Image (cartoon, rainbow, N blue to C red; front, top):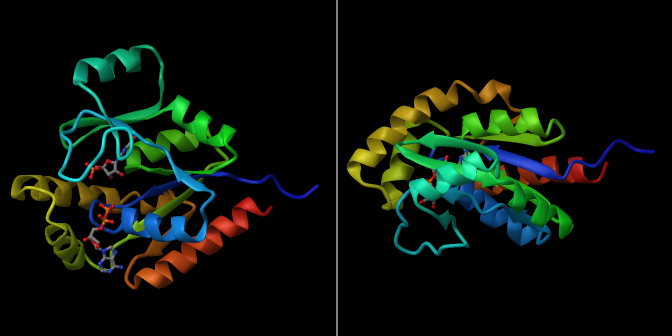
Length: 189
Ligand code: ADP
Ligand code: 5GP
């Protein structure tokens, strides 16, 4: 018997470091990976679709689901709630998918406690200046929101050593190659 296959991946990194861009590239290579759709109380951004990007729900609904024990983990980030529903992990696992959670650091720590076999990857920006350029360049956040996210980024960076792997997203292709190797290594055991 070989080592156990590990099919849950947690990806974190400061807002704007490129998590979603990297995921989109990974998905092209591994159609079998699937990202859990989180629930959030934050406002929907232009171009986002309910049930695809997030389940956009009210704070009341969110807290009711917390009380019902429906979340594998949840956090308050930048004044809004975000959480991974147990039903999402189950749904994708049942479909035989390699499950990817793209979540912030506190949630990632909680997932590791609940699912110790989960593989965690922290994506680092090449520099803080580049992170700022990317988050501003993305054009989806208000000036106030950007300030808040950059502040959170400073403390998030201090959590990087808790992850199984750290990968710098300088050259996108190189970053995607590194994470591909991590996924291949884990799912083929
Ligand atoms: P996150 O999901 O971590 O918040 P995004 O994937 O939205 O970050 O990326 C933030 C911005 O940075 C986007 O405009 C994206 O196109 C850009 N970006 C991502 N990766 C790179 C890279 N390796 N080099 C340059 N720009 C990048
Ligand atoms: P955004 O508002 O940019 O979509 O997300 C803000 C942050 O919340 C990002 O770091 C994102 O990865 C994280 N996030 C999204 N969904 C979840 C979730 O379900 N749980 C946790 N802990 N963080 C999440």
